[in-house]
Image (cartoon, rainbow, N blue to C red; front, side):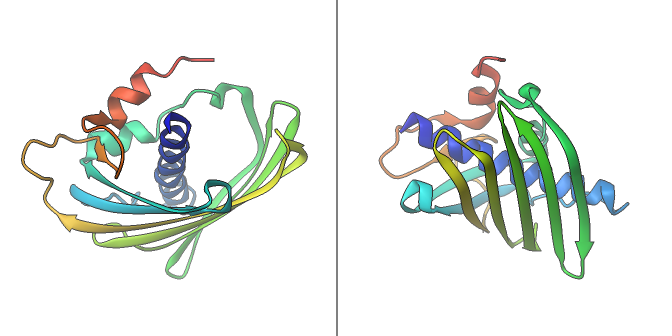
Length: 176
């Protein structure tokens, strides 16, 4: 289950990073998620179905998600483009990670003050750890203020212990 949490953290971080990079590339203000409680559902064939969680968010916790993450220093990108296409933010990248070239296309739609969706597809050449391609969909909706006692970065998921905090997890992850 710890690997699932890491996978979710990395997906959420990528979504925040894609939005910020897209804003920078398109010379627009970076979309910021509204502070409060968000319900986030991550669907992926690799995770065998959809998994829902709730996350208490503020600007500081979202900014942390955009920072370098473990393993990122091993990645070099020959392409990292973001653009706004109508009401969509589209990101395309080609990055070398270990011995594999990872080609990713992300499309984010919606509003960061109420609900958004990220569709992320990647291919790996040669396959990475036996995986040739991956796809994930992140659906997020704002539920309202964080629950009493929650602090920014707190996440809750069915079947997981209470008190998980993304900020604390990111700080504890070893640099590679």
